[in-house]
Image (cartoon, rainbow, N blue to C red):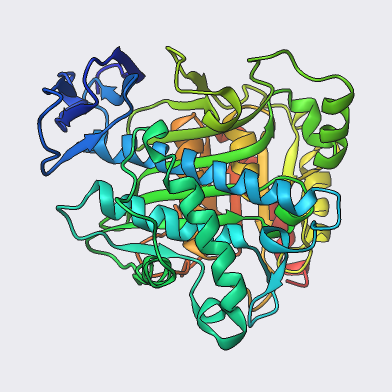
Length: 447
C-alpha cells in the first residue's frame, strides 16, 4: 500500500452558500465545486455556511471507500450536538433559584439510570440533521435513548424542554454548514426523530451508531462526557466522530475534576480566541491518521485553516505508561485492573475518566492503556465503543478484546462474543503485555 496523506478539512472562501459535493475523496480529486447562488439544493448536495466550505479529503487510496460526504456531515452534526450539551450542562450547573428547573433537571429513566434534556435533545438533533443532509437516502440509526419517558403522561413538561433545546440549536445549523428546518419542530416532530433511531444493526447494510451523551454521570456532575457518532457498513466501523466539550488541551487538567477546572478558568481566564478546552476528534478507517478541531461554540466560528493531527503516545515502557479505566464501579472491576497494572509493571496512578473520553485520551497521546473488564451479566453496547475504536486505530493504536480479537460490531446492539474485556493501547508491545497478564490472572479472578 502506498503512503497515506490526509488533508483534513480543506477551506475555501465561498462566494455562494451552496456547494455540490462529489464523493471522490480517496482518489485525490476535488471534492466540491461552487454552484451559482440561485441553484436549488439537489440530491447529494449540502447547504454550507456563507463564509466557508470545509470538506474532508482522505487521499492516497488508503481510505475504506468513498465517504467524504459522510465524514463532513458527521463532524458538523457532532459540533451542533456539542453546543446543545454545553448549554444544557451550563443550566444544570448554574447557581441560582432556577438551577433545578427547566433544562437543568436530572431525570431517571425506567431503568433508574440518569438522563437529561441533552440526551434526548442530541438524539433528536442528530437524527433530524442526518435525515436532512442525506434526504435522498434511507437513513438507519442505532441510538441509546427511546421516547417512552417523554411520551408518558408525566413527561409533558420535560418534552417541552427538549423541544425548546432542539429548536434553539437547529436554528443555528447554518453556522455549522447545515440546513435548518423551515419552521420550528413541534413535539411530535421531536418524538418522531427520536423514534427513528431504532435500527437493530447487524452484519449487512449501513447504519449510524449514536451515543447522544456518553457518560451522563460525568455530564450532570460537570465533568467529562462525550457525544459519539460512528458509521458502520457491513459490520465494519467506517468512520468515527467524538465530541468532547470539556476535554482540556493540557493533559494535566484531566487529573482534576472539571468543576475545579471551571473555577480556575474564572480566576485566570484563558486568552481570547485561545483553544484551551473542548474538541471534536474524527477518523476514517484506512486513512492512517486522525484529527482534532476546536468546538465552534467555544472558538467562535469555523475559521481555522488546519485541524490538529493526533497520534498515540510513543511510550512503550510500562513504568512510564498511564492507564485509563471507568469511574463507575457498577459495570467494571477496578480491583482486577489494579492487579493487572501491578503485574505488568504500571506505576502511575490510573486516570479514571467518564465516558469515551478515555478513547480520546489514548488517541491524543495523553494515556497509553484503557482496560475494561465488565462484571458478570453486563453486556457492552456498540455505541459505547464504535467511534472511539476507529479513532484510536487510525491514530496508531490497537483495540481488541482480551483474547486479542477485533471487536465485532456486526451482531446487533451488543458486542456479542466479547472475550472477557476490552483492551486499547497506544502500541502493540504494551497491548501484548496486557494480553499476557490477563491470561495469567484470569482464572484467579472473581469476574
